Amino acid sequence: MTKVFYLPLDERPCNAVYPIRAAEAADWEIITPPAEWLGSKKRPADTERLWCFLEEEIADADAAVLSFEMLFYGGLLPSRLHHLEETAIQKYTERLAKLKAHRPELKIYLSNLIMRTPRYSSSDEEPDYYADYGKEIFRHGELSDKATRQKLTLKEEEELAQLKQAIPTVDLQDYEARRRFNLALNLKNIELVEAGIIDFLVIPQDDSAEYGYTAIDQKQTYQKIADSDASLRIMVYPGADEVGWTLLARAYNELNQMQPKIFPLFASTLGPTIVPLYEDRIIAESMKAHIMAAGCVLTDDKNESDLILAYNTPGKWMQESWDQFEEKDVTYSSYRHLLTFVDQLATESSKGRKVILCDAAFANGGDLELLRLLEKRGITKELLSYKAWNTHCNSLGSSIAAGVFARNSTKQTLIMRNLLHNFYEDLFYQAMIRMDLTKHFLPNLNLNYFDLKDQADQVTDKIIAELARYHQEFLGQTFATPESVTVSMPWNRMFEIHCTINS
Image (tube, rainbow, N blue to C red; front, side, top):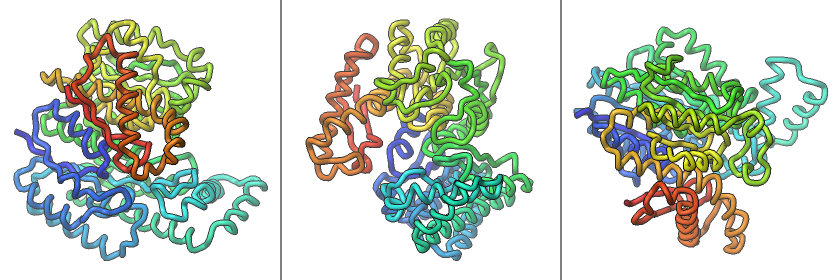
């Protein structure tokens, strides 16, 4: 049996649990470190322990899917907070080269993010000073980048000068120095692909924008790739939390000598041309990149496709998922015709085609109107997978990978449990429960979105009750009530949950 070593981006279930849960639909063995070895939010993992585990386990592995952030920094958040020295880069290079030399036939798939620059002020995932100056640091990078690429207006020049005065010099220097260090490692990993040490490299961009620090680093990264002899084995695109899914899918496809053909079916005419929230390019371009990164092929011939990518896109522009209940823009109806979209899904399913649903109409959660229509047509269970996790590209990458793992699987019970789980977490929790509890339940407990203190159990009990209520209201005719549902809060905040369905 094929054996793959998997080192996730961080310990959250979206990276450490759910990709493996989806991959269980395929016939292979995935080895991954125990969850308690992966650090905890800002506390980094013991990277020496992870290295030793990797070196031991790859002895009989066919491939290694590795997050550079976990292997080098000890996790995603530690990559934004570290004070590592240049000597660490040389040590990493030598150790990875030695590992590859010892097992030259081992396929190494590596991800290495371009460090993000959030546009808001919060230290939940950033350095402490980002709580006070995060918005200003983002704007400083945005205007600085814009100034080098096109002329600033007089007002923008004045704003940039004010920002330089407002942001403490020591904080800006700390932020920019860490970005330079991290960029040096992005470029080093490109060199390791050239040297044949890394077989395939993905460089995702977390929370990207047209201008700013991320775009500055992206430009240098693109140039390095363009000058590289290994440019066919390196990809840069928006994303982050889906990258483990993507590289596991690529490893599975390549080890089994497959290239599944994917045909996209869009819910709206303008859908492919929309720039989603938190990303820097139109949907169609990200789709091309994610399909190729996963070891699949985009096709315009539906009849020869292995998977139909049902793509629920906005009508004209994207809103947050919670906006659909009170402030949904009219273009979600006037520039999109869901009845036709759902009818097309029903037609494809009736022909025996395998349909995966990427619900990317909104950011940070799914589209309830779509689920209602799927239920009315009685085709919800005909789907091979459903994803609406966080950003558009998070949903896209995990959708494609889930389809890769499930398309030839006979494990129908597992596939249906994953399908139900994703309706629970991506639609019911993210879009419907999360903000409702934040507004109306947490204040009664003196809690806030970012800190549940010692009362997480009260919150999870409420979430479980709400999931059960929504199941009966929206899925009761399709899915049996699970024997039990467990929920925990990985970082003791409301952003994500760890949901497990036992049936």
